[in-house]
Length: 74
Image (cartoon, rainbow, N blue to C red):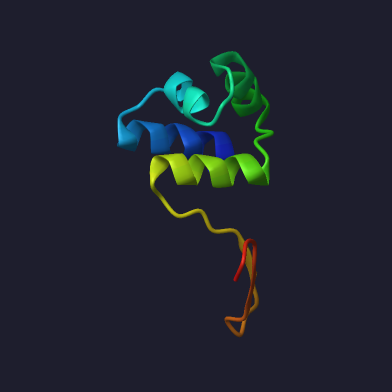
């Protein structure tokens, strides 16, 4: 699933529009719409989206032995 599809699904589950999400993260709906279309949402924007939507965002590299390299303050 592409990042843009994940964001749209998140909006759907939280019952808000993508336009409202854009406003909540301080962007215009047009700007966020273009980023979703190009699938160029940055890591910082993904963290902002998680914060305003009340969810946890995780990104990591996981080795076969279970060891992980994660973003953030882990």
